[in-house]
Image (cartoon, rainbow, N blue to C red; front, side, top):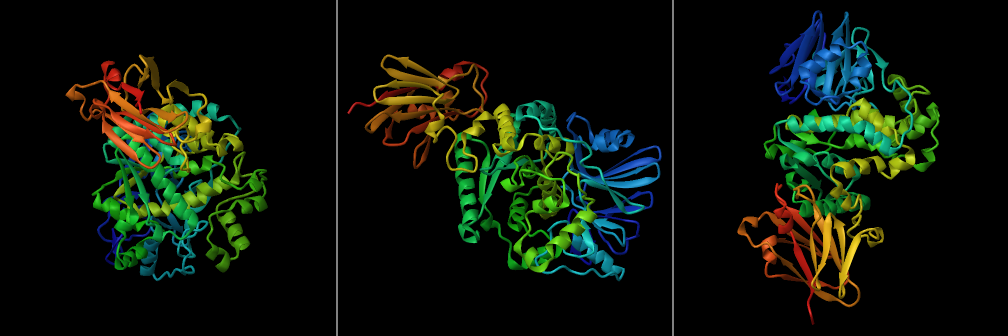
Amino acid sequence: MKVKDINYESSYVISEWNLDNVLSDFKRVNIESLNLYYDQTVDIIQVQDGSNSITMIGYCFDIRDGNIDREDILINILKSNNLEEELDYINGRYNFIIYKEGITRIFSDASQLRPLVYHEESKILSSHDSIMREILNEFDIQLEQRSAGFHTELDFTRFKEVYKFNPSLYLDYETFEFTRFYPRVELNKKSSIEVFKEMKPYLDESRRFLESIENDKFVTVTAGVDSRVSAALTRDFSNEMEYLTYTQSRKKLATKMAKKIYKIDEKITTDMRDYLGWNHSIIKLSEYTPSKEEVKELNKIYNSKHAYALANYYKKKYYNKAIHVKSTVFGMGKADFPSELDKQEDTLEFYKKCVHGLPQRFFDHADFDEEVESYFTRNLISEGITKGRHYFDLFHLESRMGNWHSMLTLETDPETEEFIFTNCRKMIDYIQTPPTDEKREFRLYKEIINNYWPVLLKFGINSLVSVKENDQENDDDLETSSIGNILVKAINKIELIEENGSLLVKPDVQLTNIYDSYSFSIEKFAEPITVKLTSFYRNQKAKNKINIILKKSDSIEVYDILDLNKGIDIEIIDKPVVVNIVYRANFTTSTWVDAGRIKIEQRKK
């Protein structure tokens, strides 16, 4: 859709005004007196029930049943006697325009993944703040631009009269008044184990829905726990997924902390790729940086300026609505607030202390108290609003996710379509339910990972130290066996067998699984030693079916199982060597378990 020859991909505008002569290359649907103008790349579904209707911008799914088609979901919403409760279970990236019993109301997904901004005087809503400005200019309505650098703080856009739609509110279009409908009920604390049991059926249905999508699908993976949860939930269809990590040139990182974070991300995700054998791309954003002229044009359209290079990468991949599995909303379940905010209070003064993520320029050029109080007024924030939740988390949802993150999704439309396992209010309540100490220890998230893909817990979380492979203080409970000066520890699903003066290791399972990594470590008791590893399976049909991966202190070596037929020597000098047996396909006979057998023996001097 275009305005003045500027192409706004994936854009949409909601207005009572006729904009046919202002916009071009658009499509349009009507909702009573409203016009919904949209770009041809935007998905729109409209269903009716008598005189009532619901129009969806985007996509949705029901976490109670991943098989329900979208039209049926919309009809169920339209017929519901408790609309707000029904919407608690609807995940996706959408805006709903619901006309029912003569009233038009506009709702958003739980974190505003599908962006909306609004201008109260004209009663216009749109995807981009810049398209709003261009439209209003045509009607001689001038917007005042904020100071340079202001764009997604609080509920700000680049223009003082245009604000971001809050995902916890709905809009009555006729009166243009907002109503807060989240949170509505008190949240009672429960243990992470209890919470996981309750949310598991919804996770399973969400996985079912994601697996059913035929578009390209990928998960962005970092060294953090959030993306590890998302990755774990894709285990059963990981062969259909790409796992993507993007890093930045060290020269382009402004702080030591940023450099450290990227270094850890690179190291941990590289280990995952090498150990798990999944389809994992690690890219450098600096290789996809757009030109200065391109950036200048992009800045006219977008107010996020987050990752134009990433958008370039997606374009070069020829993605078209590829499903990007993101993990941003998981931040609400980690109690990221400083300890001095642990003792929460339901007062506006305490809520002010919870406002976070504002850059220094905000404090340099704005009156913090005045702006935050105005933000509270616009967004219907009053004392007691949290109902058992922490306001730090609500602000994260409504401003950091609902504005900053929401707007940056436009940069990669229509190449990608975002998916977040917890992007509905029911799931958001679940991740806020564990007590603070359990959140900070990631107990709920570790419970999810352990249930769906436990091997992912073997890699360090935001740390270069892996849980059980490098931290020897944590592996006292591992099964061990020794021979001579060799000590072998079974790290994951490994059987140790002592036989005729040597040790045999093999996967300790009935059938092997492509998603598992069968691992053990070899270390010395005293002086450095040379260890020989020999495989038994010689049939050439095993070629490229089983990999043996050796993780040494300074390198990773990958062998085919057949490469070990004649034996290979490894030096154990100081640190242990970790060995992974990785199957590159699922096998339905137990003979493949024996195919992964390895003999360990010490070389004589």
